[in-house]
Length: 376
Image (cartoon, rainbow, N blue to C red; front, side):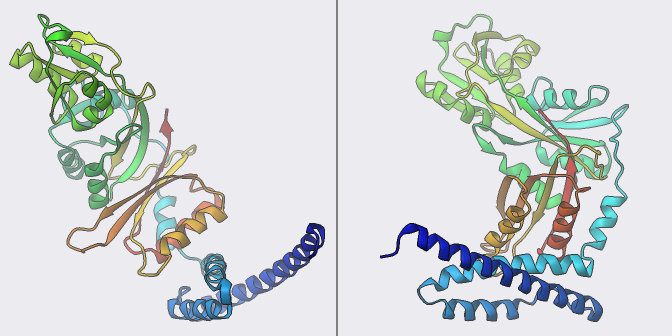
């Protein structure tokens, strides 16, 4: 049996040979890219790739599946090189080049779901202190108002650190494909608020938004409360004041409790002390600040085995940090999905714009949703 040092010496020798051959293969891929550019040939040739991968797996013996994975990654990198050579993504680059860098923020109308005192209202006035906050009944109403030009922006919750994604908002994002031009991470601190005459011991039922109920699930269970969902936390507070039931309390913000004249029965009732909701700003116009640090995309995937893995490989090869990936079913398409993806980056980076250009050419249903600053 050879000792470890001898084995590692062989590994180093083999690795050096693999690197030499990899560089040689990439040089060939570059030549292919130049040829395709000169002859106006599409970069992706799925039949050719499948043929190579099948042959590699067959030749790989007991390591066949591993060999296929290795070559899938090599092909992703080769294809990325060729996309750069042929100058992919011209339409996307033009859209980005024409984007303004400064968001209008004075004398504008900004929509949110709910009523005064809701978390959406708080996020709106933090993001646009000089704007006019306009409330709407549903998330869909906010999107429609942006579409009609009634408001300049819409502010919507997309994710909570405890309860997870707000699926209905992601569905609307993928439906409308408006631009995302800003984001805010808003700390969420809930109280239990009831009538002035109520005591904590009187409470049997709590009213709130389903996300808020989820964020306080342990507290609710610990106190044996029944929970009733409402369309908004501030609406729950308002209705608690209107209904005047001693055994009912709202899970809401402190501002909502004050706004509707309720008594604070308990403080900081969320299950997670670091409870935070991420809000986004949607717009029909694209704005990209110079210091933008987050990019959002949506797309579907090609009908190819391992296509999601291959996509993630590209981000990994460039050292880009994915911060969110969300899949939503495509209506009337069976088990077909659209993907929403966030990652850290700026479109003025050469590697980032090259990757976006490649994806815009290759991914079905691709939309660039924006490059923006996320405020914490």
